[in-house]
Amino acid sequence: MARKKRYQFNAQTLAYEVHRTPLRNRFSKGLLVFFMSVAAFAGYYLLYTQFFGLDTPKTAYLKYRYVEMNSKFELLQRQFEQNNQALADLQMRDNNIYRPIFGMEELSQDVRDAGFGGVNRYSHLESVSSSSALVDAVKRMDVIYKKAFVQSRSYDEVSILARRADEMAQCVPAIPPVALENVRLSSLFGYRSDPFYGTKRMHQGIDLSGDRGEPIYASGNGTVVEVKRNFFGYGREIVIDHGFGYKSRYAHLQQMLVKVGDVVKRGDQIATMGNTGKSKGVHLHYEVIYRERRVNPLNYYNQEVKGEEYMAMVKRHNEI
Image (cartoon, rainbow, N blue to C red; front, side, top):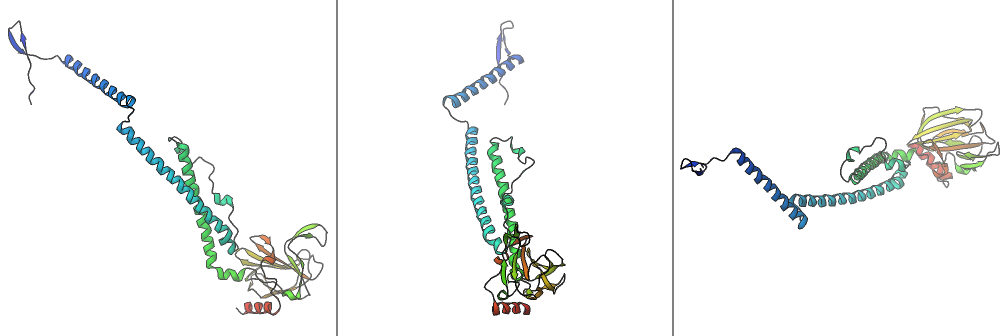
């Protein structure tokens, strides 16, 4: 649409002429209108926010998003607590039920806590507003993930042993190494007065006294890993590796009927009772070793198994 022309009477020429506004005047008017608009907007904004106490649409939206995100964050924190408690229950059952069933040592709390040290992994979050809460949440999430990974690996180990439960049942040193009606339990596991020096010392196994030549049997399936002949100490001794962390030692023997590398079954005769090495009488020194630590052998076999019941058990294992 064509712009309308403005006319102005010229007294000198006595005629109407087209009026042309100078560019500077037009710019000045435009600038004045702009500043008046800015002033009006500022006045409206102050009146809206300060006098009436209202939020701008953008501020109101940001506040809504803040409340929404804060609610989600609180829900996430509660989920962390629930998951951490559920994980603690799994750890308790794992340490107190599943692992002991298969003779596995419990996982220490240091391993399960799965802390993070060294380089600051969360420095990139410290510049964020309310960074302490965010860093704490991310740390807790990392720890839960690590604990879950440790627990998963533990269950993998238990699962492997569960699949080999039958084999393990045959390998654990679970029968007496001698017929109990023919021997006497002469020394228990634990601290005792040393028969040679009279001082209090730890006795790493049990002593079973009997007649020279009394048969000695393997207390579980395994492989012979040591056959030694010493003048002092254990004298003639045999060590069987049963697998699954178990070993057994038979010492002060008279005759040894196996050699290193032999595979034996529970109930196989491996030696006869003697009085070799550092010994004051005919007896068998018997040890059970679990994960390189001596444990009380009496915890592994039934002391009431005697006579025909024991010999039938030995015979049955020899026939398997």
